Image (spheres, rainbow, N blue to C red):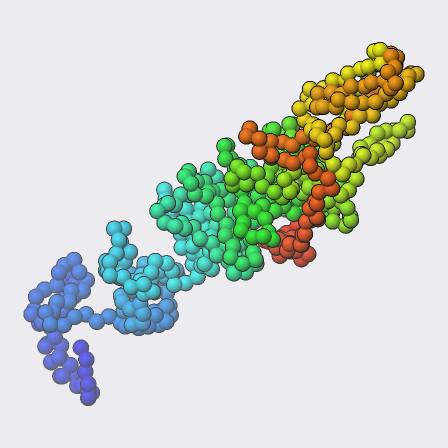
Length: 509
């Protein structure tokens, strides 16, 4: 009841007003009713207000004013005028109030889903600095920290700069394969878009593919790294395992870079180690090497091939070069200008033997401007004549022609008139004593012949040997220094606060 422009009442006026109110308000069993039809109040209510033309208006205030109410009674109801506006009641105690907004289904998140929501206006979460948690079986499974980190199966982040952490023992995650990139990690700073860590015997990051795709793929469009592995101790930075395919494969379309590259920053380290025949250890000299290959049958196999089956020139299985040396390069296992070569080099060819003190002494090979085979043997004149048959294996691999004659050198080991050699063919030669002598003198011989060409079944020359003399050979291969990988720079970038560096290769055994 509201009064305006009031004047002081006298007692008669007060009594008159009270008599006017009595028909509209009744006190019955301590129940109070307020209406305009004279009906009694409901006995279950302390206050029963009844009207068909007006409502009940409770105190209105802002959220600041509501929160400033001292020791609000449990169940205290007010109407808040500031957003989010509505009826609020204290569901807590006067000492610890818990104000709740009375709402409808349109303003709640339903277990069967919501409709007509507005992104940015409707949300699931908090408006204060309190974490949001999700549970199953009354156990916390996910937590969104008030600072923005998302934790799966955990309550605290391991690294404060992580965006997402997944923690679990015996827990795997699966995402639909119908989308292109189920998980994306992005980073524009010095750290990782995706980081995985394992402190036991498992894996920090594991990828699996059951078809023709890739379990884990790394991509880089600039000077960074598509996939990088790091180990701060004696572990493995990157490991690949396959039961029947390739453990690790790399590919590039660059003339200055490589599909797979191994770098060791230790002065005596090894860049790449290859082990075959199910070997698990390798020999290490401690001097360092770019590549160490070890196996029970072959330590290293190198092949050169072309798309077609036809032979081609200037193709080699290997090339070795000590760059500071003037004549220290060698082509290995290849073909040049129609001739096949095992080793082609302008350095000396040699071997070593031990002296009486156990020191290695170098012996050098005799060189020739032609491709020659030689053999040695013994014979004896019988009545001044002897025929020497050439070993059939040697005979089928030499050529004897007027311009490529067989060269035979005889060393007599007794008295006679002297001898001469005649009837020289690939099958043998005759030794005849001069002046018709008839001695029976023994002798030794040495023969030298040009190597025969290698031909195919149709007689076409595959490798020319017999007609070569001082052929022009290849020169030293030109090379340039390629840029080092980013992880091998003099001042490597840090990773989780740990500098990127190489361990010692001597730890391999």
